[in-house]
Amino acid sequence: MAETILITDHQAVRDWAAARSGFPAIVDISPAGGTQPMLRLVFDQAAYQDQDRADRPTNAGGYELVEWDEWFKVFDENRLALVVEEEVPGRRDNYHQFVRRSD
Image (cartoon, rainbow, N blue to C red; front, side):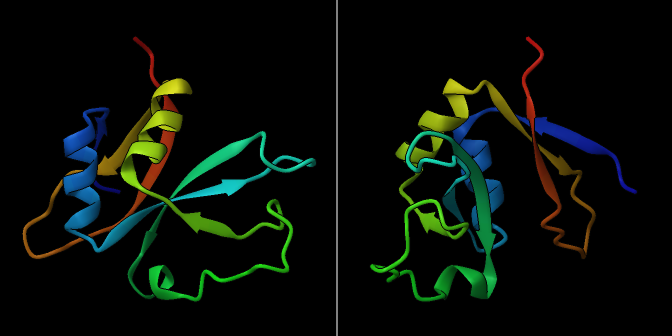
């Protein structure tokens, strides 16, 4: 596995996602709905799937594409950081994970 880097800067996160056709999304993982958001980055074709799910409960396991401001609000409130692989020339990997900031 390649070396990883930790990103907390909002513009760096946006730039990393944009370079991979990534979009901000939130999944509600709470039993009651609307109380426990989990962040996701959605890539490629998955971002173009039909988001019109009027008959589904909010917490049915699907994701909702959101604006970056809303996404970063959760990112900062939960003191998260994005871990990604270092850039390798000729390869554009979208491996990532969210971790708690240690500062």
